[in-house]
Structures are given as C-alpha cells and as structure tokens.
Image (cartoon, rainbow, N blue to C red; front, side, top):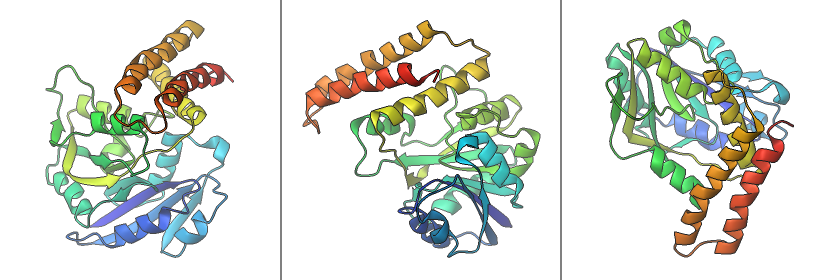
Length: 279
C-alpha cells in the first residue's frame, strides 16, 4: 500500500526537519510512502531542509494561498489511496501515530480520521482552551446519528480516503476540513476521531494574526451558508469574543503576562477583527 503525505509549509524551518524525521520513524505500517510538500513562498530555510528527503516540491504564491486550493493541488500530485494531511508544525507524539490513524480504514465506510492535538509548551491560555475544548480523551465516530454538536475535523493532522476526495474535493478557502467531513457523513460515510494517538500542534500568534485567522474562518462560514456579511454582524462577533474571553482572563490562575495585559489583548483581537475584515 502506498501512503501519500501532503504537507503544507510556510516558513517552517524550525519544524519541517523534526516532522520529516518523525514520519520516517513511524512503525507498524508496511508499504511505500511518498511525500508532497506544498510551500507558500517560504523565505527561510524550509525548502532547503525539506529537500534533504525524497520529496515532491510544489510551490504556490503566498497571495494565492487558501487551504482548499493548496490541499487539492498536493493531493492531485500524489498517488496513494490513503492521504495523510499535515501542517508542517504538527509533530506526531509517538512512533505509533500513523498506524493508529490508518487502522480505522479497515472499515470501508470511513472517509477520514483526525487525531488528538496537544499544545506546545509556549501556547497561550486561549490556545490551551481551544485545544482542550476541541480534542477530548475519548475516540468518536461521526456517522450522522449524533445530535446537537457539529463535526469537528482538523486537517492540521488527518488522513483521508482518496476515493472520497475524488467524489468531493475541498471547497472552502478556510474551514475546508469541517465542510468536507460534513459532506462525507451526509453521504453515508464515517468520520473518526482517534484520541489514542496525537500530534503536538498549536499557534503562537499576535493579536492581529489571531484576528486574521478568525476573519478567514468567518468568510468561509459566510460562503458555506450563503450569508451576506454586514458591519453589524462583524461587530456582534467581535463583541461575543470579548464577552467570552474577559471572564476567562479574570479567573486564570497565575496569569502570564499580567491580567491587565491579557484583558487589553482581548480587546485588541476584537479590534483587529473588525478593522481588517473588509480591507
């Protein structure tokens, strides 16, 4: 069996070597492996480091990047029936990660699998909260019988079946993973959350970068729902951030930096979200 790895990179010189070594060390999986790197005009040593391994290198212009376009390009250039999708800064925490992911595909109805994520030691409290809320300790199978909660699926570290991708490619500029997983379940497939294996993955971003990430997700939701974006909607979403984050700041134990600075950051993220939305 050929397994294809599609890895997205942008200025990941500090991670790409660690990731490639970790993937080479994966045990318990027979067959060949191919590696496709899709790089968005990195300006550091990412590409040079990646080329120390037998990789197929694709490049996209930074201004042309969106998640679906990049992933579809990488997958189209690969050949495996199972496709492992990774951000370059998602590092498997053990040598059994790959086997724990692909064992789920013994069920022909499984379209995709994603795993538990753990924050890097330098993650801030918001990242810790996000990751703890999204990635629980119990494995789950989404098959359309669940009520109340939507599907969580993350292409930061996932594995998908090519035949299902051939039926429905990634479509949204962001949140493409959730949309694809929802489509799969709607069409009779299963999505598996494998809590038994994990990757280290979290973001360390400025307030403005966090705001931009939220903008990308909001635009994807607008597109998915056919929703017209209004200034009032943007303001309401920013206000909801503040209402959610400020109480958490007040109850943090031993906050770093101090509580006042964290409160200011809550307002700063909301400000940049509103300020940059239509720029």
